[in-house]
Image (tube, rainbow, N blue to C red; front, side, top):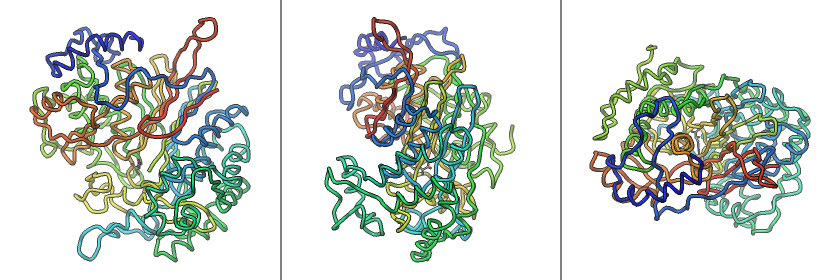
Amino acid sequence: MPLRSALVRALAISAVVLAGLSEASTTATGAQQAAGRPSNVEMTTFPQEWAYRPGAQAPFAPGGMVASNCVLATKAGVEILQAGGNAVDAAVAVGFALAVAYPEAGNLGGGGYAVARMADGRTFALDYREVAPRASTPDMYIGANGKPTDQSLVGHRASGVPGSVAGLLALHAKSGTLTRARVMAPAIRLARDGVVVDETLKMSITQNADLIRRFAGAGLFLPGGAPPAVGARLEQSDLARTLERIADSGADGFYKGPVADAIAAQMRRGGGLITAADLAAYTPEWRDPLAGTYRGYRLLSMPPSSSGGVTVIETLNILEGDRDVPPWNSALALHRLSSAFQRAFVDRNSSMGDPAFMTMPIARMINKTYARSLRAGISDAHATPTASLKPVKAGSSETTHYCVVDRAGNAVAITTTINSLYGSGVWIPGGGFFMNSEMDDFTVQPGTPNQFGLVQGTSNAVAPGKRMLSAMAPTIVLDSAGKVWMIVGGRGGPRIITAVVQAVVNAIDYHMSLADAVGAPRIHDQAMPDVLEYEKGGVPADVVRVLEAKGWATKPGGTGSLTAIKRAERAGAGGARQRGWEGLFDPRKHGLAEGY
Ligand code: DON
């Protein structure tokens, strides 16, 4: 159903749905096929209390499109596309520009994941997640009192060996078309000439000033003890030199020589573990994208060491088992969604880790028959306590996301992170960047929640050289003809997974436009804690009451924030339809989507 008719229908039926708010209002046709896209589902308008109105228009462009959380980084990507670069060139340019202009999450001191689908049909994924330093031990974050310390999150011991530089360069070397110097030029220019501080950057530094103040980045980001004023020019000469070294010498410009020495020296000074040998040994891993299907669409997402792709696909497989699609945002729709998340997260939290260190039952986790068995355990009448759910059996058969697509249809989805905003807070003098706090994504202590409340098992325990389990889920959706249809990913730890699923379900099942699919209120369930969280104002009070009557513990909570691109058509000059792309950053956050 096209957006307009979906919304007109939505408005017409909203009174019914808002009044009914339960399975009683389900009118999906019995003819719907589990594997096909539902054609006659009830949409409802967003609740009155919700922060955003439906019907917003995402920026459209007929050529290529870049969507990121940072205006200057998006512009760097568009500059490279317009200079004749492909989506990989542009993605690499955006990655380096984020490291300069978006210090809360963009990085050289972190890691990430890329999923790409080239116009000739080739697909690849790159895992450039950080690894634990060689001197790491499983109990390194347990204090003398037997309780976890904050060292996995703050300070020198919180960092894994960074992967971002090696990752971006490997992507460029594999499929870029412009020179390394050209794709890095926008970032180097931003670092040398300075970034003009806007409200967003000032606010970000202000909100994280307590962390920044504790380490060497304070001189740059809190000059005279306070954040720079809006309009001030933030020049980063150390970072510019580091980027120039990388442009000149490739990965050796970061992992060996003066920058590596600066990292190792800073680690020694602060009691961190990363050594020059750790840095010299870092390598990103090429992986095959994890493939799944949902109602005739094909998904390509990130395999382990991220749990993102597996958990997204497992959840969608469970949902695909629904013969009917309940009205959007109804109690039944949210009940089934949360039940699916809960089961996929039980498996995720118990059974996943770095594939170099363990065998995982991935094939089973993304298998449709397994999903059907999980679906069979979901009753429409009542919630299932997480404690009664059994994890999958082995042996049976601050982060930022950005998306780029170019004129040829090459598509890249990248999520990169230093974990918390401004990472561990540790800044490398001479290098000019923040270090990550990714070690907190390991299971620091089985049974104890991490900063995202995730309770994980020993499969994700700390070990030297091991990648910590991630929830990042850069995802590309192809239509039934095999063409790129949607590119999506986000930030927010485990909330990335639930946000990506809901954007995909909104777009496929409920035929929402990109703006509505992303702007719609979301729920979150990660199995433990055993709670269905909903965004404030996003779920009407009587729907919450129906959910509670089914046995759900509910509470208002947060969600991830997404960036996304979707194939679209718009009326062009003379009324002719023009094909192109819509791009979007989540209205919950900042950013820019721009095309050409
Ligand atoms: O890899 C992960 O799952 C986390 N380190 C992601 C952190 C994140 O999304 C923070 N964003 N606000």
